[in-house]
Image (cartoon, rainbow, N blue to C red):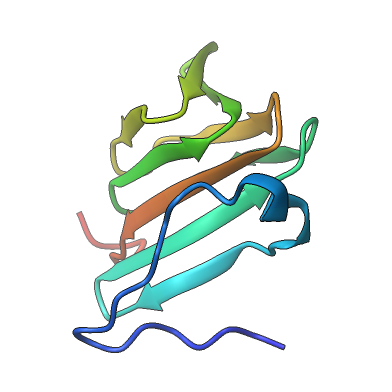
Length: 113
């Protein structure tokens, strides 16, 4: 069952999940015409292969540690760290420990610049 998206003015917690992390699925918190925010939950060792999105994005580590591969190097994110990715930046994600990440994506058409 999919979780409902937030409505305008609605509040959601993005506190660390702690012991609930293993039972919590990744979920989009909301998606509008130009903006999507999701909580990505990854068990230790999980790898998300190289991909890109048309617009700029951020990845904030809410808990755990994750490596983000970009431009031929790895950036290690720890709890509280925020990584900015420019439009169309090819990147991959590997959870070093059980992790949850807050991902924000500006949605643009692939053909737009």
